[in-house]
Amino acid sequence: MPLFEGLHRRRAVVTAVALCAVVALAATPVLAQSEASAIEELRQEVERLRTELEQMRAEKESAAEVEEVGVEMAEPAEAGADAMADRLDELERQIGILAEEMEREQLGEAAATADRSDYGYGPAASKIYRTGQGLSVGGYGEMLYERFDSTRDDGADSGETDQLDFLRAIVYFGYKFNDNWLFNSEVEFEHGSVEEGGDVSVEFAYLDYLWKPELNVRAGLVLVPMGFVNELHEPTVYLGARRPDVERRIIPSTWRENGFGLFGEAGPVSYRTYIINGFKGEDFSAGGLRGGRQKGSEAVAEDFAWVGRLDYQPVPGLLLGGSAYLGDSGQDLTGNDGREIKVGTTIYEGHAEWRWRGLELRFLGVRADLDDVAELNRALGLSGTASVGEELSGWYAQVGYDVLGGRSGDQELIPYVRWEQLDTQDAVPVGFSSNPANDQESLTLGVAWKPFPQAILKADYQDYDNEAGTGIDQFNVALGYIF
Image (tube, rainbow, N blue to C red):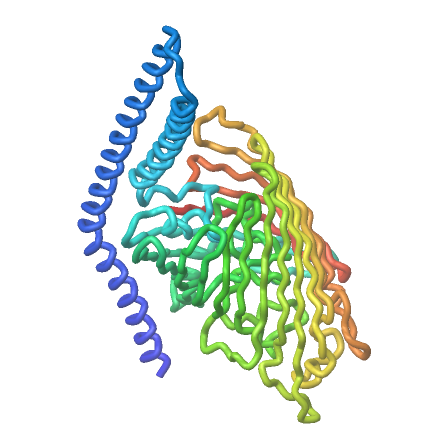
């Protein structure tokens, strides 16, 4: 049976990859012709507007000359001159918009710039929003080397084995049906092979109805809009060879669930708000909430949750925001006394980021509160220090600076430092105790090099400490790319 199951998995993966390749290749000539036609239409429109603009400028100059030779102009003529000036301004605005649109069309699939994102998704993941009608293909990947210290902080053998892992290979497929409707998806291949502990997963797959900038609708398998990394997890947009621990164990990146909701932006304010299936609380652990993710796979939907995010950008480069999650995680779990255990779950976080002339400052703080934890522990047979946390808390602060400062073209060289603290058992129910190893802090010192905006090489050293004295330090190197 294991042999047949392995062959079946292999065949499914090969079939999926082959189908994706056939679709992409078959669509290429049609897309090329469509893009060329769209660019030519935009060029013609820009030229028409420029001609009209020049004619109106000439008319305005003629009117000014008539006024100079003493011809009296009546009030209606003055009003006409004002209308002409307004029309000139409007034409200049339209030309600017069309020129930008033409530039996007010419960039086409190369528009995965390293820092640009739309509607809460990463630079490569959001390419579909910047392309014309039809298919969009993108992706990213990262390889990670981890070298662990041979001993723990208390001198005991660490028991860890160094490893070099092709952590992820991602392919994005999107399709824009028209100006209002689009589909976007992410397919993830983890750890290089399903035969060696890896797997293939759909990270997100959703439909958007784009009504207007302030109000749009999204439904499907969506990324939960909390923190920095869960939505913007492509390797070129965050510092560190590994994602922050706070955004893996309390905000369990990558975290996606089935649901629907609204999103939009108005001036400096943007938001996302969804109704999604809740966690599966019976898979929580003393180490955090990560096991409770349902990932869109036959998700138990007895309990739903609400999640919302609000961001404010008062000036370019400055981001202030926060998010909240509220829902039950029991999913009809019953206790030893036969009563339902709700496991009410609340998570809230605040974040801030400032980018200025190569300087990047980032801060995030998060707290989670769980109800009915004593009943949950007893139902799961957990005792002592194995208790799920009633309160989980963590924060980190990070600073990086591009020492090249634009002096070497597109290259960037960014030394960075991150200080992080978290405790997945900040509080536990009466009758249980916390494991001091879950109260940890870490210092990350590293450097990132971008030879060009779509590729990055990161190396850092992480010094881990915890209250049990069992921290294991490690050295990491990561290679990442987007397209």
